[in-house]
Image 1 (cartoon, rainbow, N blue to C red):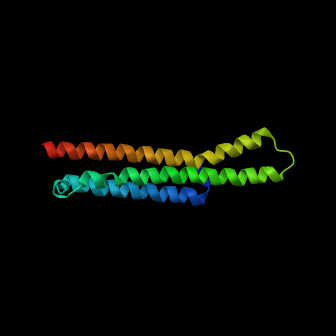
Image 2 (image 1 turned 90 degrees about the horizontal axis):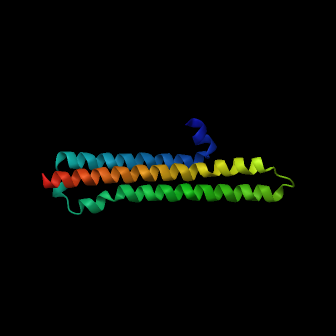
Image 3 (image 1 turned 60 degrees about the vertical axis):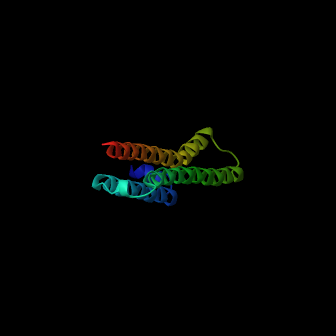
Length: 127
Protein backbone atom coordinates (compact mmCIF):
# COMPACT_ATOMS: atom_id res chain seq x y z
CA UNK A 1 0.00 0.00 0.00
CA UNK A 2 2.86 2.35 0.83
CA UNK A 3 4.54 1.54 -2.50
CA UNK A 4 1.25 2.20 -4.30
CA UNK A 5 1.02 5.58 -2.56
CA UNK A 6 4.61 6.56 -3.38
CA UNK A 7 4.45 5.34 -6.97
CA UNK A 8 1.27 7.32 -7.60
CA UNK A 9 2.95 10.55 -6.53
CA UNK A 10 2.64 11.97 -3.06
CA UNK A 11 0.80 15.15 -4.06
CA UNK A 12 -2.21 13.60 -5.77
CA UNK A 13 -2.26 10.50 -3.59
CA UNK A 14 -2.29 12.73 -0.48
CA UNK A 15 -5.21 14.70 -1.90
CA UNK A 16 -7.06 11.47 -2.69
CA UNK A 17 -6.40 10.12 0.80
CA UNK A 18 -7.68 13.33 2.41
CA UNK A 19 -10.80 13.16 0.26
CA UNK A 20 -11.34 9.53 1.31
CA UNK A 21 -11.16 10.59 4.96
CA UNK A 22 -13.65 13.40 4.28
CA UNK A 23 -16.05 10.95 2.58
CA UNK A 24 -15.87 8.55 5.52
CA UNK A 25 -16.32 11.40 8.03
CA UNK A 26 -19.37 12.76 6.19
CA UNK A 27 -20.83 9.25 5.90
CA UNK A 28 -20.30 8.66 9.63
CA UNK A 29 -21.97 12.00 10.40
CA UNK A 30 -25.00 11.03 8.33
CA UNK A 31 -25.05 7.54 9.87
CA UNK A 32 -25.10 9.04 13.37
CA UNK A 33 -27.86 11.41 12.27
CA UNK A 34 -29.96 8.52 10.98
CA UNK A 35 -29.23 6.38 14.05
CA UNK A 36 -30.31 9.16 16.42
CA UNK A 37 -33.54 9.66 14.49
CA UNK A 38 -32.70 13.29 13.77
CA UNK A 39 -32.64 12.70 10.02
CA UNK A 40 -36.44 12.70 9.76
CA UNK A 41 -36.53 16.14 11.40
CA UNK A 42 -34.12 17.71 8.94
CA UNK A 43 -35.36 19.10 5.66
CA UNK A 44 -33.79 17.87 2.44
CA UNK A 45 -31.86 15.09 4.18
CA UNK A 46 -31.75 12.94 1.04
CA UNK A 47 -30.43 15.90 -0.93
CA UNK A 48 -27.71 16.51 1.65
CA UNK A 49 -26.92 12.80 1.68
CA UNK A 50 -25.81 13.15 -1.94
CA UNK A 51 -22.76 15.07 -0.68
CA UNK A 52 -21.13 11.67 -0.14
CA UNK A 53 -21.49 10.87 -3.85
CA UNK A 54 -20.46 14.37 -4.92
CA UNK A 55 -17.23 14.28 -2.93
CA UNK A 56 -16.57 10.82 -4.37
CA UNK A 57 -17.07 12.14 -7.90
CA UNK A 58 -14.67 15.00 -7.15
CA UNK A 59 -12.17 12.39 -5.95
CA UNK A 60 -12.46 10.45 -9.20
CA UNK A 61 -11.97 13.60 -11.27
CA UNK A 62 -8.93 14.48 -9.14
CA UNK A 63 -7.46 11.04 -9.83
CA UNK A 64 -8.00 11.43 -13.55
CA UNK A 65 -6.39 14.87 -13.42
CA UNK A 66 -3.39 13.33 -11.66
CA UNK A 67 -3.07 10.77 -14.44
CA UNK A 68 -3.29 13.40 -17.17
CA UNK A 69 -0.64 15.56 -15.53
CA UNK A 70 1.59 12.50 -15.10
CA UNK A 71 1.13 11.54 -18.75
CA UNK A 72 1.92 15.07 -19.87
CA UNK A 73 5.16 15.06 -17.88
CA UNK A 74 6.04 11.58 -19.17
CA UNK A 75 5.39 12.50 -22.81
CA UNK A 76 7.47 15.63 -22.40
CA UNK A 77 10.36 13.49 -21.15
CA UNK A 78 9.87 10.98 -23.97
CA UNK A 79 9.87 13.77 -26.52
CA UNK A 80 13.28 14.95 -25.32
CA UNK A 81 14.80 11.47 -25.28
CA UNK A 82 16.35 9.84 -28.32
CA UNK A 83 15.53 6.16 -27.88
CA UNK A 84 12.95 4.79 -25.42
CA UNK A 85 12.21 1.11 -24.98
CA UNK A 86 8.59 -0.04 -24.99
CA UNK A 87 8.96 -1.51 -21.50
CA UNK A 88 9.85 1.91 -20.07
CA UNK A 89 6.78 3.42 -21.75
CA UNK A 90 4.56 0.61 -20.46
CA UNK A 91 5.94 1.05 -16.95
CA UNK A 92 5.27 4.78 -17.09
CA UNK A 93 1.72 4.23 -18.30
CA UNK A 94 1.15 1.73 -15.49
CA UNK A 95 2.35 4.23 -12.89
CA UNK A 96 0.26 7.03 -14.37
CA UNK A 97 -2.89 4.96 -13.91
CA UNK A 98 -2.47 4.62 -10.14
CA UNK A 99 -4.17 7.93 -9.33
CA UNK A 100 -7.07 7.19 -11.66
CA UNK A 101 -7.58 3.73 -10.20
CA UNK A 102 -7.43 5.10 -6.67
CA UNK A 103 -9.93 7.85 -7.50
CA UNK A 104 -12.32 5.37 -9.11
CA UNK A 105 -12.07 2.97 -6.15
CA UNK A 106 -12.80 5.82 -3.73
CA UNK A 107 -15.74 6.89 -5.90
CA UNK A 108 -17.13 3.34 -5.80
CA UNK A 109 -16.75 3.36 -2.00
CA UNK A 110 -18.66 6.64 -1.82
CA UNK A 111 -21.49 5.26 -3.98
CA UNK A 112 -21.78 2.17 -1.77
CA UNK A 113 -21.80 4.33 1.38
CA UNK A 114 -24.42 6.62 -0.14
CA UNK A 115 -26.59 3.69 -1.20
CA UNK A 116 -26.44 2.04 2.22
CA UNK A 117 -27.16 5.29 4.06
CA UNK A 118 -30.05 6.13 1.74
CA UNK A 119 -31.50 2.64 2.15
CA UNK A 120 -31.14 2.84 5.94
CA UNK A 121 -32.74 6.29 6.02
CA UNK A 122 -35.75 5.20 3.98
CA UNK A 123 -36.18 2.03 6.05
CA UNK A 124 -36.07 4.12 9.21
CA UNK A 125 -38.73 6.47 7.80
CA UNK A 126 -41.13 3.67 6.96
CA UNK A 127 -40.77 1.91 10.30
